[in-house]
Length: 602
Image 1 (cartoon, rainbow, N blue to C red):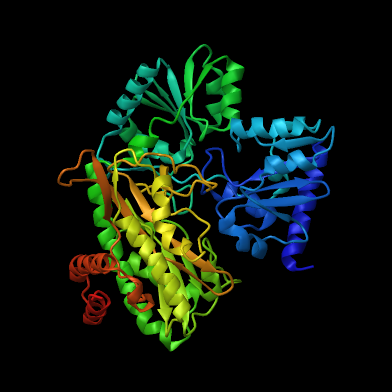
Image 2: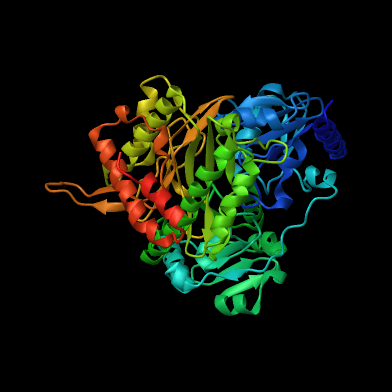
């Protein structure tokens, strides 16, 4: 048994002992926190602790005699590399789920535990139904058994809150609170519970450092119809500057008082978002006699549709970030062919280039620095154990981004060291053609991301190829690099959002890819802004995408013979803009010369 299996086995044994103490036959372990976050603080990394899985989406079920991991197509390879097969079975989502699996293996009389602070009410109802059909029972635990078994579990962060100035936010939080109050009045409701951390940050123009790579703070909010807000967060996080910024209309209360405050809302009509509010919130409101109205968090759409200040900020951030990435690309082209460079070294050098802007607050996610076969893992995360050298005649994929006060970036470039094979060029060019098709799309108001997704896949589909991830996700404004509600994704995607109509001001990624397991991976990603377009004779409002990301795409991987005249025009126009906007920010003559060659017309 490997060291990883030994550690995993001891942790499973500790958890199973705690399950026995709580009279539970099994327990469901999601990868989220009390806010249904995608990225969570160290204290909430329960799935990683029990399984070793390092991806950003997944769950597990641990029974007394078996355990299973549930991941989607993005992590098919990664989960098998990180999670010991002798301890966990691998289950594929959406073909199955933790609830479905339990509905197939649970025995009569078994009590299966779940933490109501880590699951939605909809999930709990579905899982309870599956278990009831087996004469088993879903039990909401009072104390998470993982937390009891995880003896050295980190405490939640107490990092101070930070003010997000109006010069970056574009609107005062008083105006945002007034909009929420108006929305509540229109619904005939008294208050709304806001649990999503990025929604709270946006609403109150605050940021934090409680979650790695995402500038949010651990908190809950109850917003009232009079425009006032109750903010529940650790008192240690509230500096005098933050208290002054929030003002008297925002009442600050301890985070551990949130549940009792919900129980005290007797007789009030309270709006709750079933997507971001966990089952425990519904349970507490029910217990207190509140009337629950389910509706989407009222800050979600205004947060997604960026205002002019946010658009100007993210545009500036992308130019700054594009210059840093371009400097890295020039450096990489010089250094990689010499040998001696590896994934960790490349990622660190890219971070340094971003830091040299003197504006970087953090990375927007852990850099995906992937050489050769590791590039075939869409959400690969480099570590000392997986670190590969970057070798000659191979592909290197780097997906990275920065957090700046004025914007959040996310960009992927696929680079070749030496000579690409004809197959590499063919696959890269098909991905490029899909990227260009989506970038050039003109579409009527009301169009949804799911309707555009096939544009990016068509040239792969035509030869029997595809990729197992969405084509585009929303991006925040100095917030989460993955932001809803908008997405560009296939109808079969396990992730929601593809049916959200796109609106001017939304930011999305455009990132088709191709992955050959055990060999190489390709992805081309730019962030784009939805904007209105005009056309002579148009009878409907039409929209299109403006490129925000500015950095060269590796021309050595392009088979020009596969491109149409329109696609070559797009390439040339894009690279002319890169040269014009990024060139003046480069002071090193060698970097300037490299950029000129990289942006030369095809």
